[in-house]
Length: 111
Image (cartoon, rainbow, N blue to C red):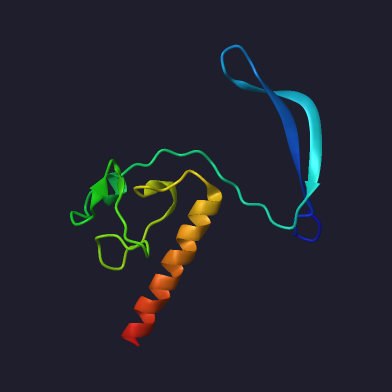
């Protein structure tokens, strides 16, 4: 980081041990970068949505339409917490774009 801006990112090469666990090799390499997105593995929990009785779920994930609207007014969702969502950062970013466009339209109609 230089002057608060990312210049590069370093990676450590890994091996899989006999138990299937990744272990670092001590060998590193760096790639130039001006932006870094962190993706972490998570399991979806619907507990925060328990009070939203109108929230439709499908296979333990949130059901959305093509604009990423949920069954609850003024609530959009995307990424791997939605039904048919993929566990990929690029897919979540696309879901965010679709939701943002839909939210913008919803707000513009109200004005």
